[in-house]
Length: 203
Image (cartoon, rainbow, N blue to C red; front, side, top):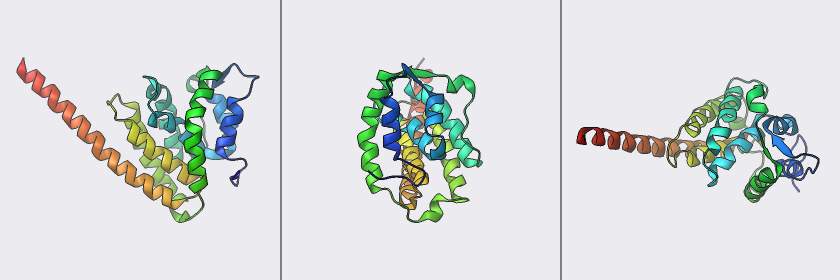
């Protein structure tokens, strides 16, 4: 199993938390504690990835707020921190286990491909630019745009893993996905506005 410079692979850390029988519920604060030394990249991935998969309605509303805060912290070189009203939110461990079960195969695949290369893309000042892009994408994830959060969440996931593993290639791919999601989301918003105007004029 591949190990990150800071310790075990992210997939292993998440799996251990999901299998911890001493917990009935897993809070966002528990994740913050478990991933503290993994810095912001790991946390951004954890909050973005569930939005890429078809999940329960309202997932983006729960995960979107920490995404926005963490992306801002990456952009402005702050340590990972979340306010208590977000950190205390929790889900049943069985639900967390099911979620990690869905994320883990993708994460394992990504971990096999990730390696330090083109590191200038993953280090300051470029890291702060990536944080700013993630912040804009996180705001989009938070908005109730039909199918509008999957591509931005994928871009955040790719950028987060790129920062975590200092992989410039993944960051470039993530930025390209971010550009594609901007085109898609603006298209969806434009179509929605057009439809609303059409309906208003029909009355």
